[in-house]
Length: 192
Image (cartoon, rainbow, N blue to C red; front, side):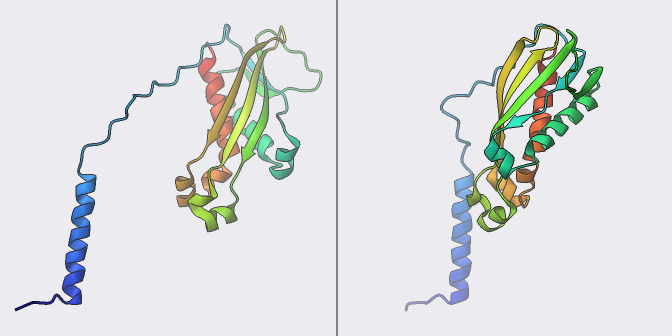
């Protein structure tokens, strides 16, 4: 005598089978990477300590200035604020026109070379498929006394599109501000 399963019983057995397969797939050992990645080398310290940090007005390309008019000023304001909050320098400010600088002053010059900030509408409708937001900055650190470049460094940052979708695009919009903090951390890390 054949016995037929009802819809409820099929649903229960199907759900149980799906859960067992899911648990089996997650229960194995974690995959080990084929090659262990070496940690990134720490940036070498500057040859001397600077008491003051002055910033030139940050630059960008005409396309970025048109598409993201507030990005460079936001990045620069964030950098200055982050450096001031560290209380490691006597003076942190914008460089004034024709201002003379001393040998213990570090001049900061930066150019935003590439920038993409996913719009709120694209993030809402496209979610993860709208892609990542990113920013690339060419940083120059100049000795205030000799006017010689003491460090040139390309810095960049990008966000995770999954996290940006989950946070409704807030990590997209905060990218210039976050990059200012990253540059401040870099300057602080390389100061002897």
